[in-house]
Length: 101
Image: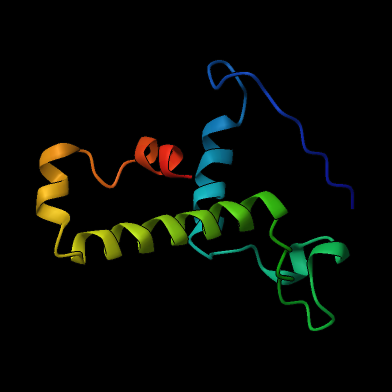
C-alpha cells in the first residue's frame, strides 16, 4: 500500500472532496477504518488502528489554551475582578497579558 497526501488550495471542483471531508470528520470522532484495511504503518500487530503521535505544535497549542483558560478562571475569582472589569471590559484580555509580561 502507498499513502499519498496532497494539499489543495480550495474545495470547489476537487473530485472526491465531499467524501474526503466526511471521512475526515468520522476519523476525528474516533471512527477509524477497519484495521485490516489500513496500511501496515498505520496499524498495530493485532490489526487495530495505531495511535498517531501528536505534533509538537498541537501539544503546545493545547497547553497554551489550558494555561490561558486557567488564568482567566483565576482572574474571575479574584475579589478585584469586578473593578478590573470596569477598567478593561475584555478582561482577562490577551492585550493585558502582553502588557504585564
